[in-house]
Length: 559
Image (cartoon, rainbow, N blue to C red; front, side, top):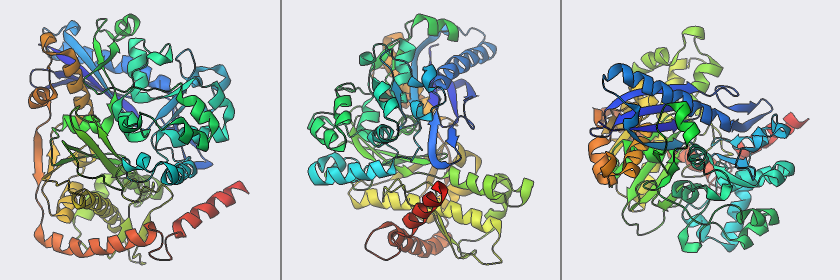
């Protein structure tokens, strides 16, 4: 038997998954929580928009989790041999760029920057650069509208250049000492293979570059130096130290170097696939095909689709990138900036019912309620809006509160809000000619909370298919590893064949309740009214209420 290992670098932890290449059997998995910060995230109590990570947690996590899955495999398979591991795949959050020195090491490893969060990884959910994102958007609208055409018409504070520009503005010393910037999905494979030094050797991901850095071969790759210089001349200088070529996940980023292999218990020279974002590889693990939307639901939700051809661009989605999922298809990305984070906010910060007010307890109570019974309607923008509005200055809203309102009613309304947001995204795809026949959900939340996918089915009036695998992102990474290993080494020569044998099956199908759908159809129209009133400039005078509240909050905190 031959095996591959997929590593899923999430927001709080890394998971390693050992997979049998013949039939996709998940042999062993192990999770390691990052050591730095608060559950792996470096935060700032004075700035709720800041979220950073320590890159060295990723490397330590690789060694620990891989050693552990190999140890588990030895216990459950009598003739297991680590020499039968033929490939490694990597997925990560994104856009999560980091600064590195000319030696190819994270700037945060420099003693000078040990206590400076600006020298660490700028995690995907760091929204400190929302002003820079708006600046990039406005400049592109004026002189390079094509740059926005493939990313929904608006650049985001979650993305590559807005974060780097913000660093340049607030900490020029970090910017000047950085030789280049690299996404963690590119850095981790480079480090494991020794291709991080010199930095020019780092293989860059088509997925990350296309979705987050406005890279497109139609206009010569990254945004040109004229555009970047109008943002700041130093960005134009940096462009020469970034990259000009990108690669899809069927290409090896390199081969596992000796010291890393020895520490992890693997053999040297195993191919490591080009990295990609978690949602894109999660879609592969879930068995994505055309006319299927895969929803990876966790702290946020990423929606992934594929299309062989597109007749027109789709405004408001996060990206249209050839080869970002499977090499020969356009990858289409959308999503919601907060889903699980919203539920966690309510349980952990509001703490309804004290210690007993857990997710399970609130779900049980919320399940006894009927649609519309609470009289509540929420907007799911607690961490901004990723799609369709692409506006991180927006915030959450709960409408209809009364003195009799119960916590479980709010909890259910928050779940419903994420369902309404999900339907808004589906409607946008279909409005622009991308038809959706199947909805597959995966990730921790739909596996642990059966109320959520049922509410989604009722809101959308569609079957919701729940993936059997608990870790489709890591599974997708393992599938990519099988492809770079190739058939002669026990893998596959095509993703079609690899997916057919290794991707996850469907564990459960949630069917819509038509009576519930009838009620939700009414409520959804009200959701859209709120969505447009607070989110679209010029429709009503409510548009800037959330932004003015944010501005007041920031002003008071500075006093």
